[in-house]
Amino acid sequence: MLLRPVTVDDVPALMPMFRDAEASRLTGSHGDGEPDEAQIRAWYDTRGVQDDRLDLAVVERTTGNVIGEAVLNEWDPRNESCGFRICLVPGTYGHGLGTEATRLIVGYGFEELGLHRISLEVYAFNPRARRVYENVGFIAEGVLRDALLWEGERVDAAIMPILAPEWFRRRGRPEAASHVSV
Image: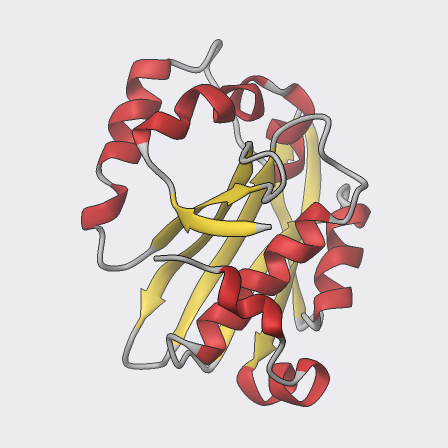
């Protein structure tokens, strides 16, 4: 697994992720019809100049295929903290790829960027993702009640951070962090 800056050239490989109804549901991404590839290209074309986020392509090392994105966002340098999100293309779930990518980007955030806190929100209807985050070391800290309205149903979101001391205590300095290229 390799994480590297996402580019507009990655958009064709990522389009199935944007078109997948299940990925949209699990991430709480409301869309207005078919995703517009030109708009998505324009979005990714600006990622390299953003100073409050790091958008990385998740790449299978053996095939070179782009299988998703992992993002550190809402960067707060004064508090050494940021948010995290990840999404993979359909057909890649259940093979440990999300866990590996999450470990890589979290390790990079703590070991290379000097972050103290990385946090995320995960919806109650996504227990698979919550298990991944718990396996990496994220801890449920609270609940945003009725945070999402999805198809007429209100859904809670768990707030799950991981702190640098917890990362180093649980994971040490994994070799995997060296597979992030920015």
